[in-house]
Length: 428
Image 1 (cartoon, rainbow, N blue to C red):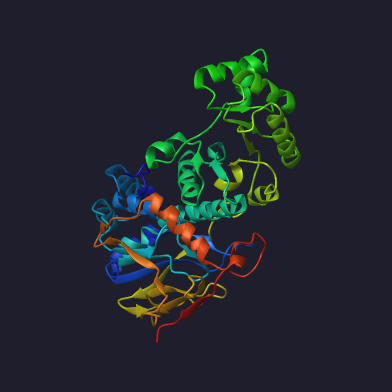
Image 2 (cartoon, helix red, strand yellow):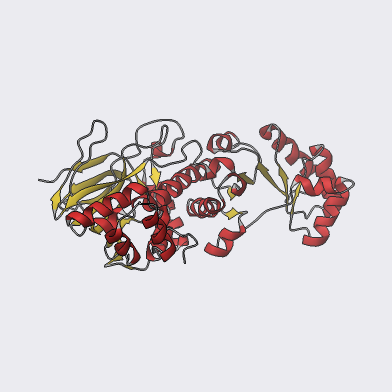
């Protein structure tokens, strides 16, 4: 069930169009809108589809309350006919798109919304708000997962985001391959495993570090993580092992030159007999910082600000454009913002080995299917009714397989061309 009140996420200009279309009789013309990105953020070689499950859930409950309709009428945003239309609003159209966890590239039609003009256009801001945020977080998180080379990551960026965005970011990061989140709302809402440890405040609360550690171990047992860098890290590690013994699950380090400190900490832990105690590092980590620690004895990374803000690309730059009216392709010809008309069908082309080579997108038609092509679009909503969607676990696995399928150059963190090219065949 949605936790948002989505209706007033609608933009003023969308309701202006609804009012005018209702008045001139075009509101029910059958239209198709598509969501796509003209370009990837600088330095990125792929995008990740995320947020579709959240979006469909919100659209299912998309309604205008009497109070909202009264506000819109009273403030002159809509006229009387539009107010009556909004009071009865239900989305009755169709939504198709790329599965969550799918990769996308410039021109990929990742979501297609079809129905009457008014019922589709009123969803524009909602659609872009959800997908631009979640896709941005998932792409950043996927790059961090690749950089971690199999080591676990915990998402811990809730304090750097809006309270609802924090929950959505935790979901997107988990979809991308993070193993845990510190956000308990995400744990409850989506079944994401949660993890965390005490902050520096808990150590400072006590008269000394030993007392703080003893309290935590007495409460949680040795299967806990002690934060050892409030004062002196080496002494903190010694105290942690003295209090918890060599069976302590992990220590966390949140500051300093992490490459040097991780090496020193591993040597110290081993010398104390704590050879199985893990080292968790955090502190403004992004994909580049994680990659720089690849050779160090780090067992888990905690990422916060970078992941919830898209690691420098807080939006996926997705747009929502009208491409077809009553079966006729329509195009926007603005300089640098042109569109290709017509509803699109997309396939991902692969070598027999499974390596992706190309994405083929055909307007008002179907690509000539080859032996190793994979159709990218699936039905999410039919005649206003949502269909069953994959679980978040299935979406995680789908993304993992997609990342395996692209050429290895596509996984580089350095700037370069998209991992695979997209060929768009216009209508006609």
